Image 1 (tube, rainbow, N blue to C red):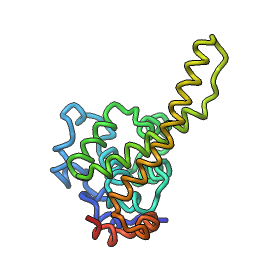
Image 2 (cartoon, rainbow, N blue to C red):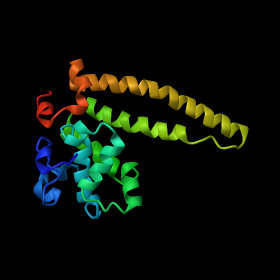
Image 3 (cartoon, rainbow, N blue to C red):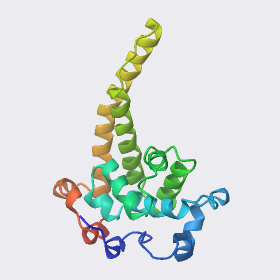
Image 4 (cartoon, one colour):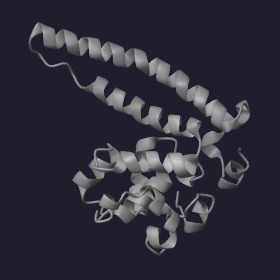
Length: 195
C-alpha cells in the first residue's frame, strides 16, 4: 500500500511535509531537548515518531504489525535503509533519545493514556516474545534456573499484556465491538470521528 502525503492530514503534524519538521511545525520544539538538536537524524526521527505513534496516522490504522509499521515509517521518513545499525537502534528503541521523544510525543500531542498504553504494551509484548525465543544456554545451575524463572515470569506477563491490550483497545476505540474488529481497516476519516 502506498502512503501519499494527504493520507497523513489527520495527524497532528503531517510527517511528509517537504520542509524540515521543526521549521514547518515549530510546536514540535516543545518535545525536542536542546541536546538533541545536533543529531543528524532528528528530522527523520520526528517524521518516524509521528507516523508510528500518532493515533490518527494511516500507518497506525492500516498496519497493525508494529515492526512492519516501523519499517514502512523508516522508508517514508527517508532514513538510509542501508544503515542497518542505525535502523535497529531506532526499531529496538536503543537510540539515545528515541524513547524520550516517543513518550513526549504521546504525552504532548497524542493525549491519550489508553493509546500510550497500547503503544508501550505492544512494544513490551514483542520484546518479551523475542526474549522467550532465545534459548537458555548451558551454564551453572543457578544461572539456568534464573533464566527459566525469568522466562516463566515473561510468559505469565504475556497473557496479562494481551488482556491489557484488549482492554485499552476497547477503551480507545470505544465499546463498539464492530469498530474494534475493524480497527485494522479504519480510514483516517473514521478515526477523526473517534473521541
